[in-house]
Image (cartoon, rainbow, N blue to C red; front, top):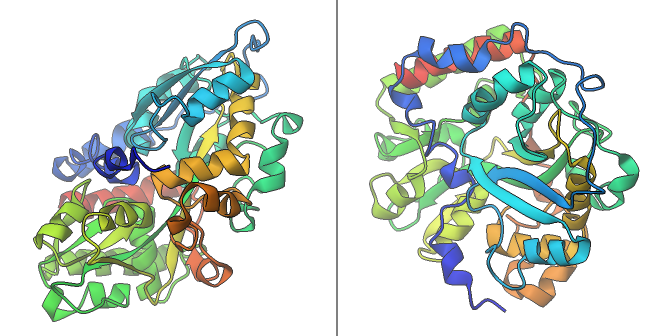
Amino acid sequence: MRSEQPARRSTLSRRGMLRGGGALAFAGASAAALKLPFFSTEGVAQSAAQCRAPDVSASEPEMVISNWTGYIDPRRAADSTISRFTDATGIEVTYQVDVNDNSEFYAKVKNQLGECEPIDRDLIVMTDWMAARMINLGWIQPLTRENVPNLHANLIPALQGVAWDPDLAFHAPWQSGLTGIAYNADLVPEVGSFEELITREDLKGKITLLTEMADTMGFFLKVVGADPLDFTDDEFADAIDLCRQTKADGQLLQFAGNNYLQQLAQGTIVACEAWSGDVIQAQFDNPNLKFVAPEEGLALWSDNMLVPNKATHQANAEAWIDFYYQPEIAAKLASWVNYICPVAGAKEEMEKIDPSLVDNQLIFPDEEMLANTWDFMTLSDEKQQQYEGEWADVIAG
């Protein structure tokens, strides 16, 4: 069943690419330059109800999706999930791997969506905070509930009821993941907390933190005693000051892009903030790379399928969502991408595909692990601009 797995192991994962394309230009850019294209929102809000296109799905069995790199099973395989989708529905899929970074993609489509113009895509995949932002700006079409019954029947409880779209009116999680700590067990003892990561003397100058603001600042908020889901400006100021001090003290080698696990395996760093799916894939080659749920808990996030305004094949996109919420299909997908599967029943189906993954807590976490997770507070445009600007100053400073 796993004859093609080596191809997966040599492929960068979705999160491994997160800051590889657009954003580690990020580290070298000025804070002012970073803020302008992403956060200027004047005049871009729309009404999803008024910014619609006729749905021609019935006469055009096709759709276009934009997703992240390494986030689907091999598309050319005869039994790929895309092939099975087309066989089951008759819908041909143009699958574009053109999402490298949330803010980069936002900048790419902002002018069109802000002016109620099409972006020539029927489905896009965005991380929680960006999905919330786009929904709030009126850029995303509501899903037709009766077209996605599997979504409502099979979404795992841990991903239900998010504050920014509690009724699944606009989004469907594609995959989910955890942010925690990774360390090289050949080089250092276990790193049990984020506070240890940023203070332990044996780690000094040999750690990386992620460039994703919500993930990293969520942990700093935890360390200063604040709640990442409900914090004040003063608490954020305390957390960003601690982040700035950690960098100034030399504890941090760098803010990481797409190569942090390569650095960890090589010994350039000995511990780091890390995404769960990346670590699972890296462990195929180096089982001494360990993922830890730190004392502060784990950040739980999702990348979400959204239908943008002016999409012309919404019903086809909804057929895609419903198809991938079948447990058998979800299990096949999860066996390749190695992130948290959002579909109830997929764990049982994984027994038929790859029994070695059934008990993997980073793909099918139990209730105890999920009880120790947290999310980042949904921000207004004004607050997003303020906090990302302060974060950019730390990264670029």
